[in-house]
Amino acid sequence: MRGVGIFDSGLGGLCAVRELRRLLPEEDIVYFGDVARIPYGTRSRETVCRYAAQDAAFLVSKNVDAILVACGTVSSTALEELKARLSVPVVGVVEPAAEEAVKASRNRKIGVLGTQGTIASGAYKRAITRLSPDAQVVSVACPLLVPIVENGETDGEIAHLALQNYLKAPLAAGCDTLLLGCTHYPLLKDKIASLAPGVALIDAGQAGANATARLLRENRLVYGTGKTELYTSDFSQGFSTLAQRFLQDESIQFSKEKVNAEDWK
Amino acid sequence: MRGVGIFDSGLGGLCAVRELRRLLPEEDIVYFGDVARIPYGTRSRETVCRYAAQDAAFLVSKNVDAILVACGTVSSTALEELKARLSVPVVGVVEPAAEEAVKASRNRKIGVLGTQGTIASGAYKRAITRLSPDAQVVSVACPLLVPIVENGETDGEIAHLALQNYLKAPLAAGCDTLLLGCTHYPLLKDKIASLAPGVALIDAGQAGANATARLLRENRLVYGTGKTELYTSDFSQGFSTLAQRFLQDESIQFSKEKVNAEDWK
Image 1 (cartoon, each protein chain N blue to C red):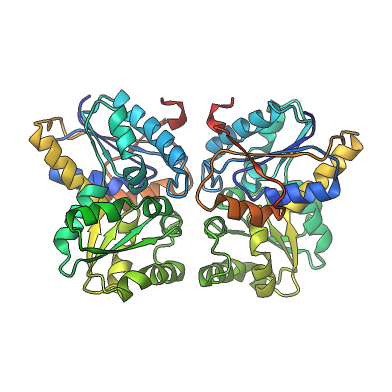
Image 2: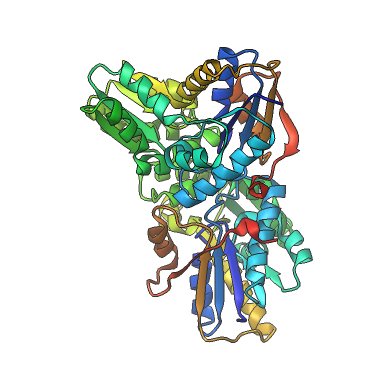
């Protein structure tokens, strides 16, 4: 099999799968979601690098031509290590999302929401100010959003309260653009939109999918039969429901083979 | 080294270390916290069993005489597998906590708070009704409490709102006793106590420490120099602060050696 590999710490990257399938209907896609070790955002950089190397090694074993790192944490903290390690091109979500955010913003005040690891890395802020040196970036670590999404509590009062807290600083600063720097956050997009009316929302996973489609087209790597293979490291309670919420395509099923990512080197 | 080994999915088991140190000042204690793969409570049973076997294998390599499984999820879902696998005695937190809860309750209405995995296993409910067949058990899965504690948000509005939701059913049922079935929850004890006035709170980690001290004394396995060795699989941001909140003893430091639990078989 040739095609493109996508991985994420969990199921959030399925949004990027959906987007890439829309952009390149014929491309073969292999996805790996490391559900057994989610979340990555609260781990040390060293541990994120180790996990990312194992996840990528699994995709490489599937003979993919390129890899999209749909995980905001890995894209922010371990992308250079991955690129150095792998012989296939690797695309992260940080640079593409920063580009889209800079294009979208009129007042050059951009808010960034991400996991603790992502925000601590400063990667989004650096990418944005590299493109727009006088941009004002308001970064907010949102440690509870991944567990809220994972546990299907996106519509509850807790999600509302958490988002209200996390959005306080970027809204007070007058940001006209919010970069959702984690693949889980699109499931909170409607709630974020209602709490931040008139603010442009940039989805990092979608931006990564756009960049990957461009890369594949430019390098004439687009081919396949439109096959989608989905793998995961665990099938926990509520797995299928959550997968469907991200993927929104009931015809695509996960492989029943459970991948022990820790065994890949 | 001889002594007792304690493991948990993260740092919550340090409360049990503290308690065991108080009960047995001379005992040598080795602790392992699998911070790199926390939380266990949302994983499948199969994955929890694999992780638990690896954690225990690390402790066995330290030549411990007995193991206390401070993790509520492992105690609920993987204890029998661990006992079958290991030649040293293994104590979980479920049976001891159920005993203490049954003793504490006057109206035999007992609430149980735990992770998704713990509650889905039904282990606490089974243990309680085995001891007190006509007890009414109100079990509540509390998936957001571990992330709330892990992210130091125990004093905020979100913790308050989450606990209010989770306590609704046991309070409405008139429970006079609440079993805190996860080692993270003691850091929310004051908040729980204020939301459930007059209700007895049973701490599973403490109950496990009591049972372990009894086992060691009965089997004349108590010896050592009062040494405490702490190991972890990751040093994430905020690690030291969280460890100190659980341990409350600044003189005891974690080993700088990071243990890759996934390598232990």
